Length: 160
Image (cartoon, rainbow, N blue to C red; front, side):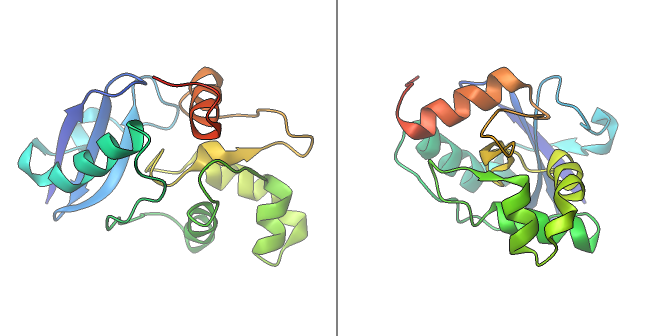
Protein backbone atom coordinates (compact mmCIF):
# COMPACT_ATOMS: atom_id res chain seq x y z
CA UNK A 1 0.00 0.00 0.00
CA UNK A 2 1.41 3.38 -1.00
CA UNK A 3 1.34 6.45 1.22
CA UNK A 4 2.87 9.90 0.94
CA UNK A 5 3.74 13.03 2.84
CA UNK A 6 4.99 16.47 1.86
CA UNK A 7 7.74 18.12 3.91
CA UNK A 8 9.51 21.46 3.69
CA UNK A 9 13.17 21.67 2.73
CA UNK A 10 15.68 24.32 1.71
CA UNK A 11 14.90 23.23 -1.88
CA UNK A 12 11.17 23.62 -1.60
CA UNK A 13 8.54 21.01 -0.78
CA UNK A 14 9.63 17.38 -1.00
CA UNK A 15 7.08 14.65 -1.58
CA UNK A 16 8.00 11.41 0.18
CA UNK A 17 6.35 8.20 -1.03
CA UNK A 18 6.40 4.84 0.76
CA UNK A 19 5.42 1.39 -0.43
CA UNK A 20 4.33 -0.76 2.53
CA UNK A 21 6.15 1.62 4.89
CA UNK A 22 9.47 1.65 2.95
CA UNK A 23 10.57 4.85 1.21
CA UNK A 24 10.34 4.42 -2.57
CA UNK A 25 10.13 8.03 -3.75
CA UNK A 26 11.39 11.50 -2.95
CA UNK A 27 10.28 14.09 -5.47
CA UNK A 28 10.87 17.82 -5.78
CA UNK A 29 8.36 20.30 -7.13
CA UNK A 30 8.49 20.46 -10.95
CA UNK A 31 10.84 17.47 -11.07
CA UNK A 32 11.28 15.82 -14.43
CA UNK A 33 9.98 12.20 -14.46
CA UNK A 34 7.85 12.87 -11.36
CA UNK A 35 4.98 10.35 -11.31
CA UNK A 36 1.41 11.64 -11.23
CA UNK A 37 0.21 12.62 -7.74
CA UNK A 38 -2.60 10.07 -7.85
CA UNK A 39 0.00 7.26 -7.77
CA UNK A 40 1.39 8.42 -4.39
CA UNK A 41 -1.36 6.85 -2.30
CA UNK A 42 -3.06 8.32 0.74
CA UNK A 43 -1.50 10.99 2.91
CA UNK A 44 0.15 9.64 6.07
CA UNK A 45 2.58 11.73 8.09
CA UNK A 46 3.66 9.14 10.68
CA UNK A 47 5.02 6.71 8.06
CA UNK A 48 7.91 9.06 7.30
CA UNK A 49 9.38 9.89 10.71
CA UNK A 50 12.75 8.22 10.01
CA UNK A 51 13.07 9.80 6.56
CA UNK A 52 12.17 13.23 7.93
CA UNK A 53 14.67 12.85 10.77
CA UNK A 54 17.52 11.91 8.43
CA UNK A 55 16.67 14.63 5.92
CA UNK A 56 16.52 17.22 8.70
CA UNK A 57 19.96 16.11 9.94
CA UNK A 58 21.31 16.20 6.37
CA UNK A 59 20.05 19.74 5.76
CA UNK A 60 21.52 20.81 9.12
CA UNK A 61 24.91 19.50 7.95
CA UNK A 62 24.96 16.78 10.61
CA UNK A 63 24.36 13.73 8.38
CA UNK A 64 26.74 12.68 5.62
CA UNK A 65 25.33 9.25 4.78
CA UNK A 66 21.70 8.16 4.73
CA UNK A 67 20.97 4.83 6.40
CA UNK A 68 17.23 4.43 6.02
CA UNK A 69 15.80 1.54 4.13
CA UNK A 70 14.69 2.36 0.60
CA UNK A 71 12.91 0.39 -2.09
CA UNK A 72 14.13 1.30 -5.56
CA UNK A 73 11.72 0.28 -8.33
CA UNK A 74 13.41 0.07 -11.73
CA UNK A 75 15.13 -2.20 -14.20
CA UNK A 76 18.11 -4.25 -13.03
CA UNK A 77 20.45 -1.84 -14.86
CA UNK A 78 18.81 1.22 -13.26
CA UNK A 79 19.07 -0.35 -9.81
CA UNK A 80 22.76 -1.11 -10.39
CA UNK A 81 23.36 2.55 -11.31
CA UNK A 82 21.41 3.74 -8.27
CA UNK A 83 23.45 1.40 -6.07
CA UNK A 84 26.61 3.04 -7.44
CA UNK A 85 25.18 6.48 -6.67
CA UNK A 86 24.85 5.52 -3.01
CA UNK A 87 28.60 4.79 -2.95
CA UNK A 88 29.59 8.33 -3.94
CA UNK A 89 30.80 9.97 -0.72
CA UNK A 90 29.25 13.16 0.60
CA UNK A 91 30.93 16.22 -0.90
CA UNK A 92 32.41 14.31 -3.84
CA UNK A 93 31.35 13.87 -7.44
CA UNK A 94 31.74 11.21 -10.10
CA UNK A 95 31.32 11.40 -13.85
CA UNK A 96 28.92 9.29 -15.86
CA UNK A 97 31.96 7.57 -17.36
CA UNK A 98 33.35 6.72 -13.93
CA UNK A 99 30.03 5.16 -12.97
CA UNK A 100 29.97 3.18 -16.21
CA UNK A 101 33.51 1.95 -15.46
CA UNK A 102 32.46 0.96 -11.93
CA UNK A 103 29.66 -1.10 -13.48
CA UNK A 104 32.17 -2.86 -15.73
CA UNK A 105 30.79 -1.30 -18.91
CA UNK A 106 32.87 1.75 -19.91
CA UNK A 107 30.75 2.33 -23.04
CA UNK A 108 27.55 2.76 -21.01
CA UNK A 109 27.96 6.37 -19.87
CA UNK A 110 24.84 7.52 -21.79
CA UNK A 111 22.79 4.66 -20.35
CA UNK A 112 24.11 5.59 -16.90
CA UNK A 113 22.93 9.15 -17.52
CA UNK A 114 19.46 7.97 -18.48
CA UNK A 115 19.22 5.76 -15.38
CA UNK A 116 20.53 8.59 -13.22
CA UNK A 117 17.77 10.85 -14.54
CA UNK A 118 15.13 8.30 -13.53
CA UNK A 119 16.33 8.03 -9.92
CA UNK A 120 13.12 7.93 -7.85
CA UNK A 121 14.71 8.93 -4.52
CA UNK A 122 16.61 12.16 -5.09
CA UNK A 123 18.99 13.52 -2.44
CA UNK A 124 19.00 10.25 -0.46
CA UNK A 125 20.21 8.40 -3.57
CA UNK A 126 22.56 11.24 -4.54
CA UNK A 127 22.19 11.60 -8.29
CA UNK A 128 23.15 15.27 -7.85
CA UNK A 129 26.76 14.09 -7.30
CA UNK A 130 27.15 13.05 -10.94
CA UNK A 131 28.74 15.52 -13.35
CA UNK A 132 29.88 15.61 -16.96
CA UNK A 133 33.27 14.30 -18.10
CA UNK A 134 34.82 17.78 -17.81
CA UNK A 135 33.27 18.41 -14.40
CA UNK A 136 30.43 20.51 -15.79
CA UNK A 137 26.89 20.35 -14.48
CA UNK A 138 24.67 18.30 -16.69
CA UNK A 139 21.02 17.32 -16.43
CA UNK A 140 19.30 17.00 -13.10
CA UNK A 141 15.64 16.09 -12.68
CA UNK A 142 15.23 18.73 -9.99
CA UNK A 143 16.85 21.44 -12.13
CA UNK A 144 20.47 22.55 -12.49
CA UNK A 145 20.03 25.34 -9.93
CA UNK A 146 19.06 22.81 -7.24
CA UNK A 147 21.91 20.52 -8.31
CA UNK A 148 24.43 23.36 -7.94
CA UNK A 149 22.98 24.34 -4.57
CA UNK A 150 23.22 20.73 -3.30
CA UNK A 151 26.82 20.42 -4.49
CA UNK A 152 27.74 23.79 -2.96
CA UNK A 153 26.10 22.78 0.30
CA UNK A 154 27.97 19.49 0.46
CA UNK A 155 31.30 21.10 -0.43
CA UNK A 156 30.83 23.66 2.33
CA UNK A 157 30.74 26.63 -0.02
CA UNK A 158 27.10 27.46 0.67
CA UNK A 159 25.00 27.16 3.80
CA UNK A 160 21.25 27.45 4.29
